Length: 170
Image 1 (tube, rainbow, N blue to C red):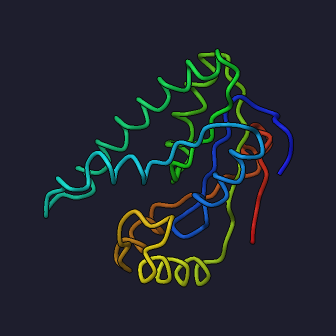
Image 2 (image 1 turned 120 degrees about the vertical axis):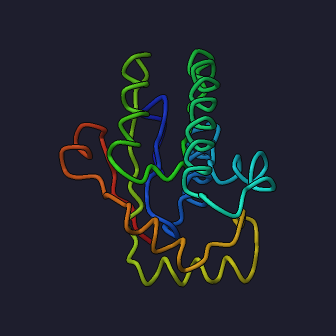
């Protein structure tokens, strides 16, 4: 990890890429505050989730939670506290929501892309499901894993360059 270079850091990667662990290490290294969508969803919404239409239900709540996170971060930036977003940021559209917001508020951004092979990520998910240790928020089934995998768009070179991106692996 390096010294502070941005107001906010966005950590993206698909399921099992190690975003929570990496984000926490990054938060420690820049003396920042980490915002994890999985933690917010688990604490605020998952107990009430329906049995049907899960994607729509989750997506609406993820968007509201991320909007609230951005609102809190606007104040943190004024206070000089960097923020680390561990929000999946599954595709360019989702990542651009954060970029456009940051640009509108004059907030500097750096992107970290957790690039980990699919088989390694699935092994991690299975281990996390079984151990239910510190980064466990909810069980991720193979169907869930594959669904998110089908939606995933890795950042391209233009996006990485624009956001001073760093590709990280294990």
